[in-house]
Image (cartoon, rainbow, N blue to C red):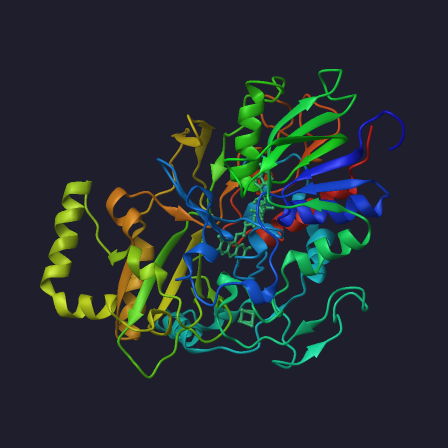
Length: 523
Ligand SMILES: Cc1cc2nc3c(=O)[nH]c(=O)nc-3n(C[C@H](O)[C@H](O)[C@H](O)COP(=O)(O)OP(=O)(O)OC[C@H]3O[C@@H](n4cnc5c(N)ncnc54)[C@H](O)[C@@H]3O)c2cc1C
Ligand code: SF4
């Protein structure tokens, strides 16, 4: 743009999967693009060695912890997410499964398009860009999952995951193996298990090494450590004259001044927590035409995260990539073997025996009962020197639909119940699989304290809140991700996911954004 108009063609809020894909594809069309990202920019060697380094791992600005992993606890769901240049890709476990057919023909977007057919070429492109490939090596946690699959008569359906990791020679740097030399150099994976505390070895295909890297080469500008707080139309109320975006430094809360920039178009890509919060705030102030559906239909993968601690010292569950294998215990469910790298033992501080009960009082009594019946064996677990080596996490996911809604709270979001069942922390099948795995590895199952006591499930796969609809009564965006009521405003991230994929969603977010960004042109 030149003259007195807005400075940029597009401002993208957030640099995760949706933000990075949008940045590259819009820059390729010749648009002048600015990405604003709340979190920090990370170099591989700066990632913490273990998750005990809370300052470098957790994003808790109030305590001056500026890491890349955020935990948000609301009334009906606990959310785990990523913060930083590259968004959730910094913290994610690299796993890129495709959803089953049900996903494309259910939920809010059902019948609006033939989603499976429309998205097929975009899944292929996303897999290529992210470097999806089959995990070539199975280690103890995967072998335990394979045993479980065999025990349940599903050994044929057990398989290694497809992941965004470069499996070259460990410790050997090679020129970019993905983009005909125009990407950054890589090193081969060391199977150290630390993908979720940041890959220190340049083997994980985070977004700053593919989409965002290439976008910046095409001239995309990026401001990190800046939280967007306000978006308002310039001139006409529908955004036809562009938008003003205000942001503040996110890592210097006390002395941060507000800055503003302008653009003709906006892509909201702050992830569900970022985009829905911003939209709810703006709806009451500057973007009153937004659909009343903002914040509705928040989904999870109906997940359950269960820790299994093994007493077998000959095993090393920390070896391998973060999620090395997967199998479907039944038609609605997927189970994955997850690990942290050696030395990462933070989760034991939040782990308690698996406990069921009608109410919190009953659950507390039963939990104390568990601990008192075998005090030494529980103490031994809590004092294990290398918890990650002795433990695996079972990630249980289902594509059965359930939702909550997010609304504006006093300081942050608050959650509420919608029609239909909300996600639950108590899933009998998940409990059974945890117990069976524990028996197979001579161990004990654990769950997160918050889940056991309050019954509130925890998810790393929060989705929805700005769903696709035929009109503003049904959804927040149309089938091309354009926000109803506004010109040149789009949502491209997990909040646009309009059904439950039942598996890890990053590949789907990438594919959906590839499709949407291909159709974005300034009007
Ligand atoms: C521990 C963990 C493991 C996971 N493993 C997997 C896996 O193996 N496979 C998989 O498919 N998925 C996995 N996920 C989920 C995956 O990371 C998310 O689904 C995905 O990152 C969501 O993409 P997104 O584009 O919606 O937003 P994100 O990737 O979450 O990016 C949003 C970005 O926007 C920024 N932002 C938010 N608000 C603002 C604002 N107001 N101003 C400026 N910036 C803002 C945030 O800081 C963030 O960087 C995992 C998640 C976690 C937490
Ligand atoms: S296993 Fe280790 S080296 Fe391989 S991608 Fe994960 S963190 Fe990087």
